[in-house]
Length: 333
Image 1 (tube, rainbow, N blue to C red):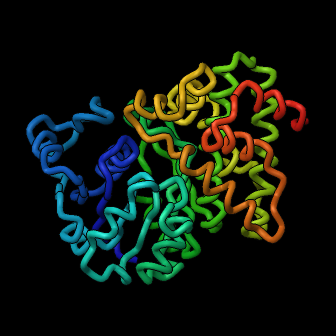
Image 2 (cartoon, helix red, strand yellow):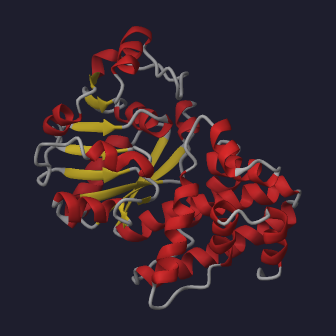
């Protein structure tokens, strides 16, 4: 595979900004789709993102900024999407060019609500992308620590190892270690589920549960994740690998975790709507909870998922968090 492939990042949030920063360590030019021209003008003037990871100094000579999604989709060979799952279809609907020959890298953590599909599945079914040309960018890795250049690890999952290695090479640097994997669907589901479990961890903290309970909760979350992923996509995998367990732990415990923060607010008495309004960033786990609940319920062999069910009933059925967690404690072991 040619090392001259052109890369473009779609999205302007914290994770998209972190991805741009990582790619600029290795590439002379990086395309960046930013929806608002006002934000582009600010970046060009001040050389940093006005709303996310503002401490990251951006090098204008390396960036090809565009507010027209079609221009960048036509320009790049590898399209990296880091738009929240709830909004990605709105942006994809703006495409009027054929992207079927492109390589897609999903840095989106969730199900696309309009189709009920994983991001990779959505690109395959709706945009005719070959499955071998779809990769997943997975953690464990927080955007905030990338901004600080703290040593972090990411996984590139793709059934085409050549593509996985090409993308991994462009992310590697003195503060980023990369590895490749072939479990694309498992990596996508793990990235979705860990946000739900992080919300649960946050709710528990907000309710006053201590570290002892948190350890039991996360231990059960690991086993629940394993059961869920196995029920939807059977293949040989070790759930203790960093792409699964590592990403779950950092999202469940980190002070940078927006999903844990969201759950913590719910546990402290915020309504779902007020917690969402208070936060400046999207908690992907909110949308993931409904998707995971429905996928499990509609499965021919639904997995045992008490944590997912509890988070779903708190967020969507407006159950009392204290009462719901009291019932959950009796189901954990």
